[in-house]
Length: 355
Ligand SMILES: Nc1ncnc2c1ncn2[C@@H]1O[C@H](COP(=O)(O)OS(=O)(=O)O)[C@@H](OP(=O)(O)O)[C@H]1O
Ligand SMILES: [Mg+2]
Ligand SMILES: [Mg+2]
Ligand SMILES: [Mg+2]
Image (tube, rainbow, N blue to C red; front, side, top):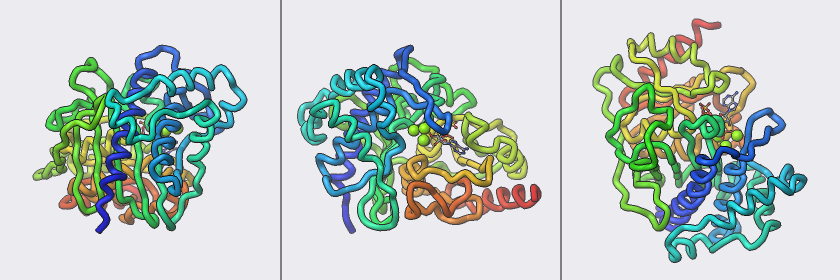
């Protein structure tokens, strides 16, 4: 079995470096936000983080492909925005020269930065080594001052082998349980920022998200759910991204009376993987929406390696081999292995009753 130790080290350091950049933008008022063709927002933080991460991947693994959320066409036409991003990218380094060397050093020029962003254009698929990258997941949360995540996963022949999530606004302490306020960034910089990782067959870990080399890691595990009515379930903040109504019906069916924890980004997967919460439900709002692979690849592996099961609403494993989207899946149901079947039955009953 391949160990993927080099890939894991590069991925974690690349995400850690990119998070230095996103944290800078998070604390600035002007985030250089523009609207994409689908009317969703993108900021200088998203572009900068994508450039830095793809640069590190290409330096270490030149033949690998990348499926990245962003592309640079709007920057090629907008010099002001491009220069703003370059100032950020050029000034972002890990405070450990050895770690910086592992990432292949800085990006050489503005043109190289734009090319790095555009190298995230792989069509995906079921052959070879392909990285899935979401430079800022939960951009709306990032803009609102909530949770967000820097997400990177390596797929080999369509199967996720390595997953890394940088969550700058989650508490370092794995044992802090989720509350209704967890989705809001309420604490100061002290004690915040977690780097989650998993390798297929090797378990999942967390460690503090630092600014130099990698900190000390510890294994993480999902919590045992003894009484499902006491379970904590997570869902999106944005009602346009998952159906709060269906999710409420499902939780009622499970006897859960606690309100949901609304949280942006794959911080939801990370939070249940470390046992701070129990269940993540993402029921489709629109029948025709196809989930993007970069919104799920890292979280899917981290939850499964921490003792969870992740399927769609029909009980199928998420299939990352179909291209840039999860074309063969509908929604997400993530829970500890022991209770996943029970949760899935409630999901199916609620969806059947709607028909
Ligand atoms: N209609 C629809 N249905 C499902 N998902 C959608 C939809 N539209 C957008 N998106 C994707 O949602 C990503 C963020 O969603 P999250 O649930 O993680 O967070 S949030 O609370 O909704 O912000 C978000 O990721 P980012 O763009 O990286 O923020 C989108 O890829
Ligand atoms: Mg996303
Ligand atoms: Mg994104
Ligand atoms: Mg986006």
